[in-house]
Image (tube, rainbow, N blue to C red):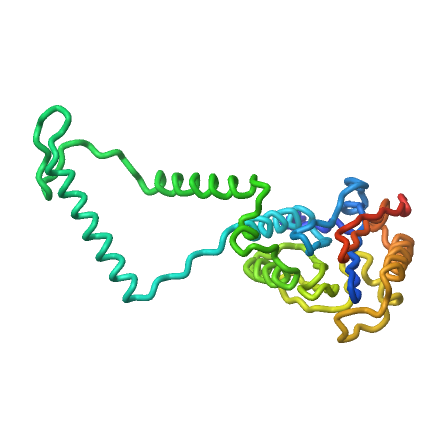
Length: 294
C-alpha cells in the first residue's frame, strides 16, 4: 500500500489563556510554554501582547500566525485613517482646476528659453529624447518600496500616528472591532489563533472579548482559550450574560492562579510559568507564578 505524507500549513503550539473583567479592572493571564507535538520548543514565551494603552491580547494556537496577527494590528493601529472620496461634483471641479493650472504652468515653461539659448519645443510636438523604460514590474516595485518606507517609518516612530490623528489612544472596544475585522478579512485562509482581548472601556470598566478564528466575537465577563481551557469551566461555572464579574481584583487573581494550577495537572501543553497582567485605573502591572515543568 502506497503511503502519502500529509502536509499542513498550520501547527498547534498549545498553551492556555484566561481573561476576567471586573468592575474597575481586567486580568489577563497565560502560560509561557510553547510546544509542538510531544516536544517543548521553549519554556519562556509570552503569549500576551499589549496593543494599546488599555488593550491587551492573549493568544493561543499557531504562534507564527499569532505573531503575524500582532504585526498587522500594530500597523493598522499606527496607520492614519484614509481620506474620504470627494463627491462627484467636487471631484470634477477639482480635476478641471488641476488641469487648468497644469496647462498654465506648462505654457509658462515652454515660453522660457533653455539654458543653452535654444528655443523650447512646441506644445504637442513629440520629443526625440528617449524616455526611461518604465515597465509594469518596475512601477509595482517602486510603489512597494514607497509603501514599505512609509510603513516602516511610521512603525519606527515612538509617537503613534493614530494618537496624533485622534488625540487619544484606541479604546478597547474599538480595538475589539479592529481585531474582528482583521480576522474576518483572512477568513478564507484564517489565522490559526484563538484570541482573548481584555482591557478597560471608556467608562473605566473591565471588558473581555472572546473570539473564534474567523472574527466572531462577544463581550463576556470571563473567557478561556487554548489547550487547557476545558479544565477551567468547573471554576468559572456556567456562562452568563453579564459583561462584568462580581469578583474583586484579588479574588480574580487567586482564581486565575487556581485555574492554571489545575490545568497543568491535566494538560501537557500548559506549564512552566504563569504570566498575569492586571489593568486598572493605576495602570498595568505584571505578576508571575511558577508552574509545573514536566
